[in-house]
View 1 (cartoon, rainbow, N blue to C red):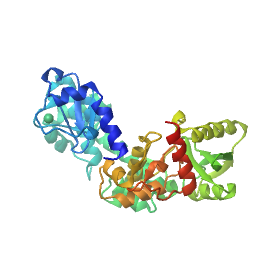
View 2 (spheres, rainbow, N blue to C red):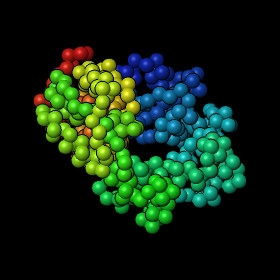
View 3 (cartoon, helix red, strand yellow):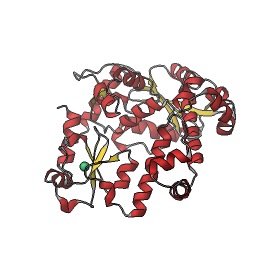
View 4 (cartoon, rainbow, N blue to C red):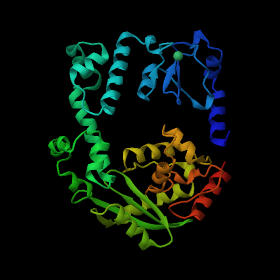
Length: 359
Ligand SMILES: [Zn+2]
């Protein structure tokens, strides 16, 4: 077992809830549930199903939290039955939300009603009570969010449309104006008038460029040549207007430099992370790897539930524009070798050495 898995297993084994799971303690039922990442299922502590490996386990205080995290109730021990009727109803609606998010087409009210076992009228009312939106409005809002995200990174507008869950172009174009307020192509170019502020500074790893959009830090680039970093930024945001940061911006750069020098301190600034749905999944998983830990591309692929996608995972790491904040430097080869790094193998080595020393 490698280090990452071993430390995950140790963390779970040190949790008192784990001994309740091991002994299948019925008296612990109701105080928490445990989920198994490899199966996507969550159980009561007393469940008689095969024991999970500790490194694959996560604990949740309530079934609702487990459902929110994307797990579904075990058919055998039915942990969702522990919920009060109102909470069970909410959990059922949350399940419908997941269904809407992943469905090829927007499910009709009748389909959702059949799925939930409620009458269409009842479902409509309950859905609105839990989410504040009708099922139809929820589906449209979710697709709008995805299409915005996809358009910012996809090479082709049509790719973005399919990735966002639209079955056809025509359907999307019919809705796009309402969703984006402009044509998809215009939006993808960064939108006319998108402004990105940036500044180049120095850190112990060389030159560092920090850029911020109106939504948050959108790039942290490392290199030797400041001009090359600016060119890289422009290539990343081709239609955006790049504006040199003012004196106020310097304190932001100082904050980011402080973070790059000591990642364990954390970066308390909003990030503007732009990528395809797949890249976002990889980057989110990367952000969960603490300083000092390393993970292989294979494990990272497993962790996002796409064990066969090792090459695509490596591609997503290489496309990361937020050095250190999305810690792609913590990904190494299966044999522990450093593999590549967008900002140079020597920088990767220094970052890893420093993090290991700091432990
Ligand atoms: Zn179970």
